[in-house]
Image (tube, rainbow, N blue to C red):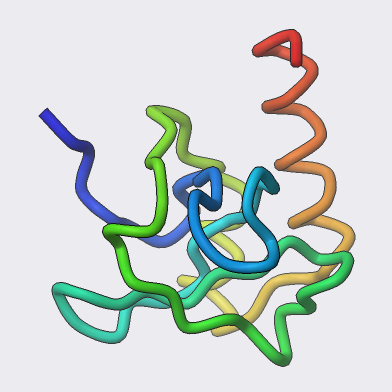
Length: 93
């Protein structure tokens, strides 16, 4: 069963020039598309619109990112980089 797309969920990009990279969902367009950013090459101010079929959803959801977006409507790029880095270290990649 595939996890639902939600703000703050970590994903791995399966298609496109960023394939193999990790990102965080920062917005949901509709049931087919989400907005992703990684805080580095893809900043929060210019998120990438991505088809959910081109993403692998990780079970982890960054509560810091989700809370920040819920409270202020935005998140710092440093927080996005930190959430991805923490997840990768915990997973041991």
